[in-house]
Length: 234
Image (cartoon, rainbow, N blue to C red; front, side, top):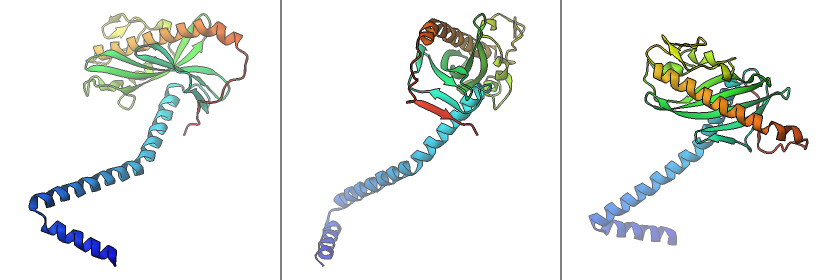
């Protein structure tokens, strides 16, 4: 009973207040309700968004390392910075085959940055670093000209698969490199930016792997499973 009386008393005071005070109180209430609704919406959508992002990332990793049998184990605890714009992570397939993921960004795109994900296989001692796949993570290239670097728009990016980093030439002639790598029609700057980025990141990764090979051979302790992400595919 007392609660009802107190509520009625507050309501009467609110109604008796000046228009300015009523407006301020209404605005405060509306703001509080809006914040509560936003917090509720974030709580309801956070997990589904995170799940969708993780699934998309898994699909990209599987796409750039199609030669490795699933499930893939991604070492998230030991990312290796290759330079200011490239990071490398180790990956192992179900048969313990080793590979590397490289997340790199080039600033040489026609309209700005192009971010790439590169899958790299070890190859042999004489011919290291075989490209298993490349995907574009983000870009701002011209629609209809530069955006065919996206796999969803064309198969141009598939030219990288199976090529050795050492074989990637950068001398263009009539829209084609010395080793037969075709540029996108009307987007030679975009094509060159992607090619240079893959070549540069691949060289840096191969050099790092060779420099660390002696340490890897000398290390025979158990591998720490913490921080290893298991990708089982679709």
